[in-house]
Image 1 (cartoon, rainbow, N blue to C red):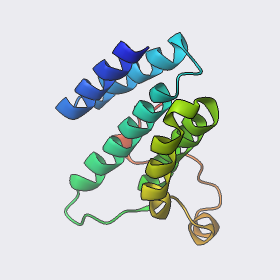
Image 2: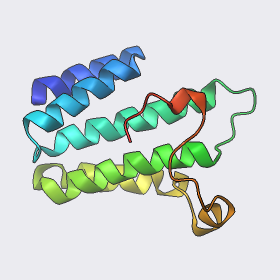
Image 3: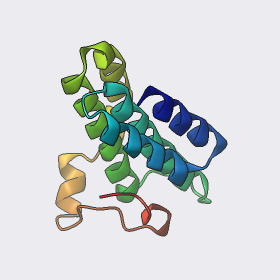
Length: 126
């Protein structure tokens, strides 16, 4: 599982986010209690949101982006609850992106939207 996490990280750093997600998910399937798998998957979600925002003329975070950051946040929460070895890392990452996840006001303005709708997010797992 650790090697798969390292491969996922390499693919993420190379910008191949789909392959990175595949390896992160394989790591989690291989060892579902290994916190690093969830952290790496969260990092792929974050990188995906960052890449999508970066492609726009106006680099403003919208509700779709916030939903993807929330997916990352949930992965970090899972890592924190599953594996004490990665508890501090997961908490640090959660505190870093907490301001990026949807607020109650965001949810009020988008009451029926649970998944991102932008084309750059269509490949992400639900």
